[in-house]
Image (tube, rainbow, N blue to C red; front, side):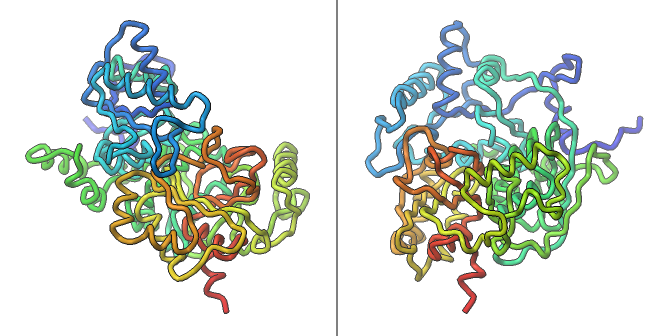
Length: 476
């Protein structure tokens, strides 16, 4: 029997398919489940009220990240209205069902998608769900990972399965080599800018090509993190030897004979050479410059040395009137004028954090820029590590001192100002450059105007007091 060539997504989907429910919907086995206090607490409460149990408690994990305060000495009390109740509900629910729980003061606490990778909970070839849209981050390890709602989490906990409509397949091949001051964040922002924020709708996206293979694992996670901002179902990078080295020795990774079996399986996780994708995109990244968003969608992006576009100019290539209206609305909210040079736009605050860019490698990149420099007068600057383990490792390397000497606040781990729920805030700051993944109106606070960029670009901008990149710092 000759098997049809298959993509990596095909292989993982079929390996985890329990039943074909018809109309393109599959019942999939879920290998690992991760909960956080906002959606997870709701799911556990509903599960208990329905008299159900958790099918495999050992395969479920939980943490506190979304609404926890990040100041030193934090506890259950939060600035988020009702936040303490969410935290207590998550703690009690995890205890009731025997779920491994990384509480506020646990050394393993942190943002779900950071913790899942560093603890070895997410693994190559595994399926993983969480009640958070950025679960696709873990595709950087070669996991089939995606976000589900509270009802999906409840189903996964009770049955170790979820129902999902099978997505189409997309391959994005990135050829060439990124220059030293261009990072995975720049790459994914440029992709979204080029193909649109809805360019991946209905697709599971495999990132391939020489530029992707050259990325370290944490950078691959940044790339996959923003697949959802491309409207993708998920993003994934096929595992390789670098992936295996990253996973080895982590607390929840296989050990002994199981490790050897796992390596053999992982080495086979790749799309067949002649596999057909529903859509193929190819880009060359060699000339890519540092990127920054100017508007209220990740697709509103230009290079840091570029200018705010004019929605009415022929050069924008707009054919959809709705897109033009959207750009015009973004300009009004952002208080920008077409033709304004990005490098002339002053900032009030700089934020380094989130599941997109708050891992140890991200903090190293930012610290390399900040070392020996100071945050510009009038700029509020915060760094929130992605996990307590990342924070501890950064402090062991002295990175915290670099940030503090430069004028950044050094915080405890949490989602913090990736989004605004009445907790952390920038005070009176209105224009922020941020390593986060979304720049929608009000995302980081009422009236706050957010510009997305890489950690290095955010650090450079903080010292310049305006939007700029490392290239600006090196210009006489």
